[in-house]
Image (cartoon, one colour):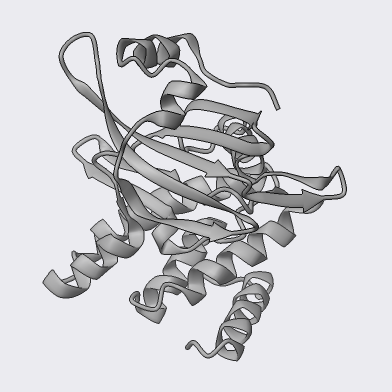
Length: 258
């Protein structure tokens, strides 16, 4: 896969003396979370702040990995897992599904080691749906209209993703980032490594709706059903919708959730 960096981001990286693979790789930065050591190598992420020419800053997540590979029929000897993630970031971008904003991507083989760098813009001002729900559970859930507005925003992004036959595969609340502001609710989707395009939209719909339902137990069953109806753009359950809802409920129960 070719290197990626738009002119805008290249200028900003150059402004911070980080305009090359070598400089990004050697940058001393604290780990945002402990590196993942598996797949025969390691992969870690750091949070950095880039200075802008006007005196401001832009948050950036710098992900680096070495010999952290996955094997596919097209790559039997392995490829960096960042390749698949970057491909999906660009897929979401082409499909107009709000997700991560890519800054820089490149892969190099150095001294026999496969190294990769993936930089994305930090979602400053956003918080995960999981964190938001936890806060609401502690401080008190807002009124029904506010909850409905949030559900409508998330459902719209989810619907756009599925219209493009994209299945996220890990559609957990912690991977749905939201920003509640005066100009409305904004949504971004993260953790795209396992996303894939399905032959039929219905496969993606069931998988992601089921996953979100199963991992949204802090929401009442009524709110989870309300989200389901908003996603389908329905006021009430139709026979077909009821069949799908019951299938999701049965799968959720079988996994030990209610």
